[in-house]
Image 1: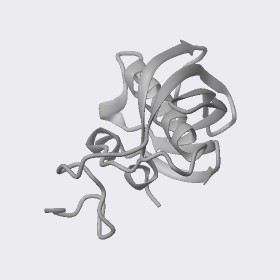
Image 2: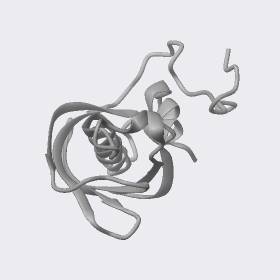
Image 3: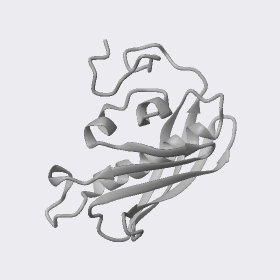
Length: 149
């Protein structure tokens, strides 16, 4: 399963960044991203927006997976504290701490491949119970990078 399938909707930005779903279980998700030149800032480390996006997606996947009836999760609020530079492969873990009827409260972190802490994140996500069938809905034949018409 990829990130778009885990969220129930296509996430073109995550595809462009190269975010991969490494592990998922109810209320928990682990994502990976290999930093590459175009994702770096002027200090040659992962741009803060890349780190924040990786954390956001990890928490959103954890939120959605906490409730089997949820069709999606939308970020309501997100706080990220940057702790250290992100270099090489980044690994984000998201955990759902509490899930109610419409909101899920999550926390997580982003680390480098050596386990060094890059960022901590906390967020609130709205769980969607239904979704439209617009162009961004995932169909069973969805394949990232393919012409999914």
